Image 1 (cartoon, rainbow, N blue to C red):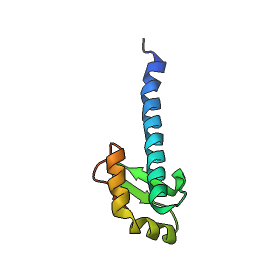
Image 2: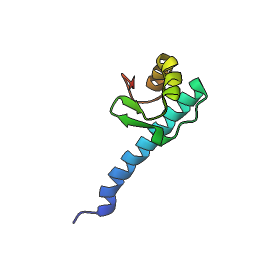
Image 3: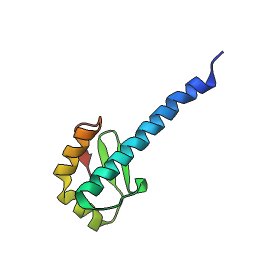
Length: 84
């Protein structure tokens, strides 16, 4: 018989790693731009960070895009990041 707790543990690990990755991205953007983003302000799809904020905030992030991408690649498992 399957042990449901072991099965659900897989999903828990995936959720926790996603939350850690989101927090890492928020901290890196804050370090470079002094903007306080929330997890609802962007969406992470594979290697793509989709911004869901105002145009002014997006512009400030795009000014520092190269350094943000470099920092994310150095401090996380994500490679070839694209910010849109």
